[in-house]
Image (cartoon, rainbow, N blue to C red; front, side, top):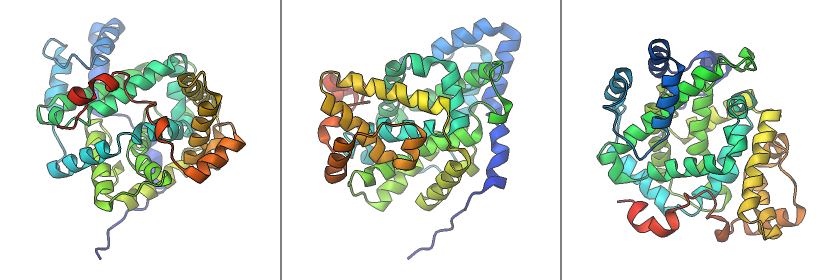
Length: 345
């Protein structure tokens, strides 16, 4: 048996990362704001949010240079692991959307300081359904193997990276922003979000009673480490194995998880969207909420004020997993185009 070298993370290690953003992306956004004004950032935001438009040669020279310089993989890039991770995703494509909606996203909201960015931006609480659909489309999109081969997924991820930099630029200037929260979308928060889409998904599958091969889980974690690298997460914050992911997640949770208006408000908006999906069926509404509480656990659920639905909670505990709940959080157009648009090859 190979004994893995495992880093154990602590406050001294993580605290400086709350004041660190993304040097490369932030420099681009600050340059455009200085030379072309805030209006130019608004136009850029529109381009960055359009994942059908992957052409960047007509963008400001700073943007063109950014894409050219950062369209690269880590030196340890392993194509076979990427393929294995995507196969793992498609094997579990029915369950993962449920986990993302009922576990990964509210798990992020429990990090009170990091959740302030989403809360102040208003969009996630005022247009929750659209935001969830966009997130789902992004996740399903980057699981297209062909779009990694032709470079499209790299551009998509770099667009998100620049979008984060714009949000960081504007949010840091909000009079409501409290510097005690750290820098908006800082390195620690980005690392925590990366874990929510990788390690927490793996934990979610286990909680649903779905067994996975350790090699597949490690490949899935690796896939999101590559995505994290492209998103500008510093490599020292990207776990190298499941044990490191466990230790990093535990340390971030101990440091950041607490009750907040932002966390409970974002969770309520999410639950309202969940209920809207099953507006004519109270039982399904309560089962989804019970599923959320089951995945998050009572401690985190209480921080987020997730309602307790006693009967449905007992049903979830006994049965663990309801296949008919898994359509939630899938992109809305997958039902009709799953074969040609969302197949793996």
